[in-house]
Image 1 (spheres, helix red, strand yellow):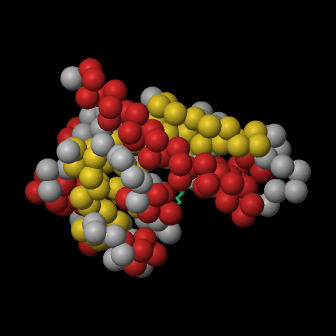
Image 2 (spheres, helix red, strand yellow):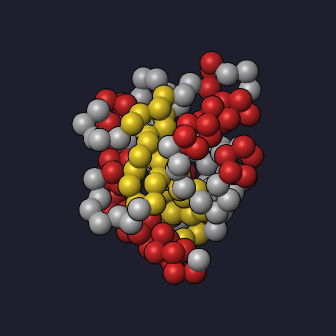
Image 3 (cartoon, protein in one colour):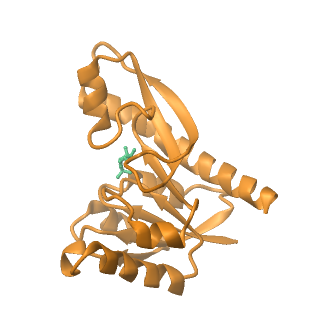
Length: 190
Ligand code: GRF
């Protein structure tokens, strides 16, 4: 069985959806969190998943921060990384160790509304459709190859909260589905 890690910085609802998904062709062996106060850490106490809290403020630079994470990933023989609300750009240390093996979820139809607050950006732009994208991670901000997308209508009466809720409902299904899809595809090709 493939070993994977989930990286999260916030509430961790996507991390939870992945950890609790049945029939994934991988096991989630590690949760990496960069924020010692993040709610996902408490949530993870209920899962059978080791939590590695790694605060970048305690390292001299990004390279040594990512090296500490990489050492932990290697110790656990992690093969794939799933970013689930991890609010940092992945640097060369992790990108080189996991080429084409890091997935991210973003709450818009990329390339529209990349970066922070994609939901606020969509509401401000007045679009009628936004959505969810799952993509491979490269050195850019939300720029890697797109693996899956699903549209979500933006309703006249939508607030940030209501649109976010409908987008997250899709995310919680689409992320585990896409993980299954890409791992099986890779297995078929290798
Ligand atoms: C999700 O909406 C995801 O698309 C974005 O950050 C949010 C994380 O939410 N990258 P959660 O912590 O998984 O609830």
